[in-house]
Length: 281
Image 1 (cartoon, rainbow, N blue to C red):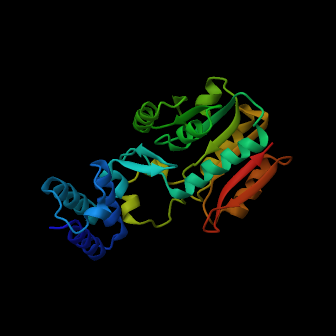
Image 2 (image 1 turned 90 degrees about the horizontal axis):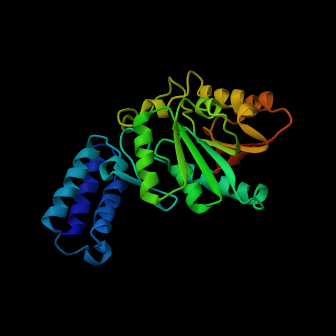
């Protein structure tokens, strides 16, 4: 069977299963990349049996709803192939924009500093903190997560990319407070989905709920960080968050109630949706 025929079969099977058929081609592209095969030159040639087996097994898992990142064991984020498994949320393209925004704000506020301390709160796979450090080595990152299993994944990614990232365990800002640590930048992509909101089963059934749901209204963890930020943030610190597309008004009002003198901005993603919140003290 040729590569082209395999991809067509994969697309049809995923379509029939109600899954995203585009993932069928991405899976083949990634499997070929691992073996240094140029898929576009080989599309009409027969696919090796071992690769065919890996591909069809991956399609089978995705038919059941398993996300592509878990099938591959990694997800591309900001140009880095981060290790992922069901203990961590798969990093999303929207979160890459949060990383880009923080790097932009760094250039505006801290470009004259030899080093700044960055807290990556609820780090999961470590994608945000590690990407920031790799893109700007002057950022010394300390990343936290309540999940020991997630920190194991973050540790593997830290070693993989040789990043200057310290990992600590604890709930939101608690481990920083307990260690009397202070930061210039606090970045956080907290769980922000309201508890009752309906989600695709490929997300709910496979990705960790602790990384998805933010209490009854989705704002639980923002309140937590806002309430304790003064204990860890330096006087001119920047706080940056990913937010839900429909949380602008509620989160802006909440932020103003905690930081009445700060500059609070909501930033849109490339799709024009409200996606990021910054607080500049």
